[in-house]
Length: 246
View: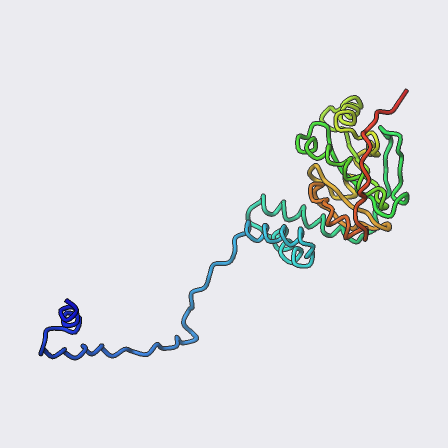
């Protein structure tokens, strides 16, 4: 059996194995003339460039974000992309400028702060009718609990648009336990304009009298806050929110 297998592998006994068939000659590759058009990848779409700019902004690379946003804001063919780029560009250009002082004509909670009351102030813009705001509002008491002992303050601002009443704002305070935060009605939308707010919820961070950051309140995580404040969050347990008034 082993002999048969060996013979089968080598060919029939006594037969000559034919030489391998010669391969046809190959033509060496030629370098294309520099004048010939060379295929290249198509440029990224406007949507792709917008997403890359958003990612750069989120990662703190504002220079790269501006490089991408300026041409989109000025000349994107898609109106949606052009408007979104212009909005984000206004937010980025706000960073590093002098912070506009609080312009509030009514405070709904006992606190009536100024931007000089704490080294760092988190401003959150909301409206009672906004469903996304209703998602973010319950997170703010915990944010304040962790970071107020480290020198931060949280201020909520509303314009009371679309028929919202004082009672609606008070209901938000009760529902989401905002008693310990400063909640105010901005005077004639002055703060919204000053901080380039075109959609809500929105947030801005002011430190030492200058705008440090602009974005969405969901991005206000402990990593960013620790970087801005230079200290870890407080580990003290948060006291339950208590109503105020008579």
